[in-house]
Length: 161
Image (cartoon, rainbow, N blue to C red; front, side, top):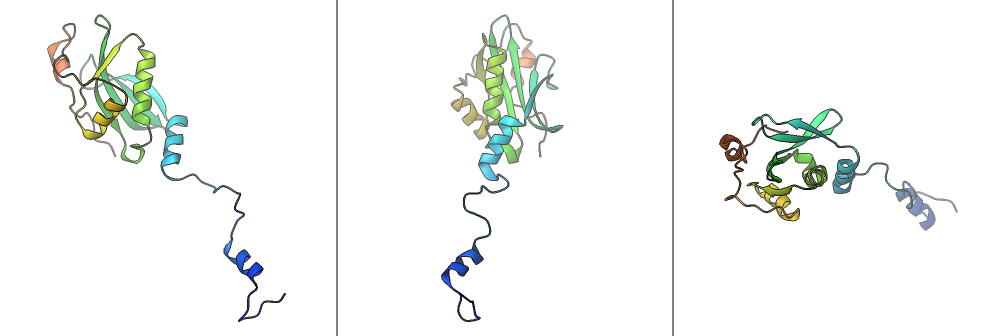
């Protein structure tokens, strides 16, 4: 068959529109699935002391030498209670499951600790609800920690981009 200017056979027309075979996956993953895979494969979690108080600690979520999230918490080994005071994940990775992964990491590191939250923002409240963290504001203060450390919950530590 020969194609002329006015007539193009159907077999030729199909090949003109198709650029690659249908069974080949696209070269790059994009969107929500890509962010979720990236969060579970490439983001590393590091423990460090928090800047808010000397008793607070934080988990830094690091992706290629860049901090993309932080979870601030306090643990009292005497009471076996822990309070998650702040969860912050960078905007591009917000729906990737990084917050869930960080809270699960805390539970694995401290298996005998009962965790509570004092998270006030909507996104972090949803995380606390999903992870079944009770939001008990009345019993936040631990008698073993100084008063200033127990009352500074929920104050943002840094601005993230």
